Length: 336
Image (cartoon, rainbow, N blue to C red; front, top):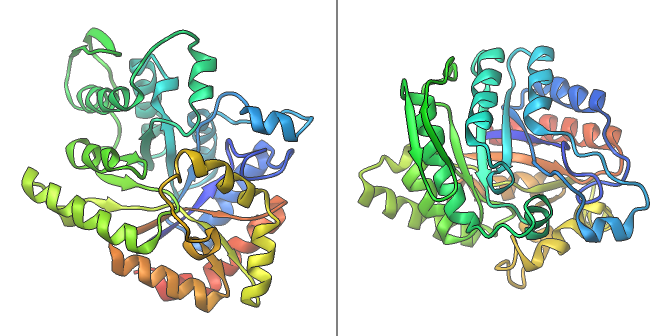
């Protein structure tokens, strides 16, 4: 099983306090993750501040644009891969420009880019960028995956979709990777269907281990019907992580974190089907031994990649300390 780190590109005010990470901090996290042996870093995609964040913080958060950030990080690293978790396609209406950026960064990095796409957790963000525009965000994500595949593989491409349109586009260079890994984010059944139909991997968030096992069974059944090799489809859930010397210390620290507030805020959207199971039980919160046990249970349920571990922290220093603890005390027992 692979293990990766969440990069705080657009997380201030949500997962982390304001202010949190400067651009040099993002580079330092990626460099340190590479040194510690993590597979990749995964940043998220936000353009404007959510209402609940504005109500809590007087200072606006910094949201670093994820693709531009990776162009910079690619120049400062040599091995570690870089992923978007997720690129919110309903906010990106020019699909050709986005595809061009992706292909260019994949070339600049020597083939180290992975692209996860999703509908976005906050409808208000989409409405702020495109007031009055009516769009089915799920269908828009499906179109984006079709368009990316076409633009990345065909010499000339024409697309006449519901949301994306272009004609006779010859886009070169193509990505360095063939194919470039594409993931679909989301916990609902439609995300699994889109994964099997269009993508290389599924990227859910904070899903309880039993639900993950049932979802993986569904994914494999759909893949078999589609004629795809189910074992080749990456199952890459995201989780929050905090490792303490005792269980009580870990839970107390987690519940006092901005990360915990963020998970609560998602209870009406991304995590609405979580049920009565506590956030600390679902996520990788506990002692090192407890986190190892949870990681192994997730692997048994079908996870192939713990993608984007988001460490609960109030400072970049605390985040990097947690990265090191996980790398030294957990990774040797779960990475294969």
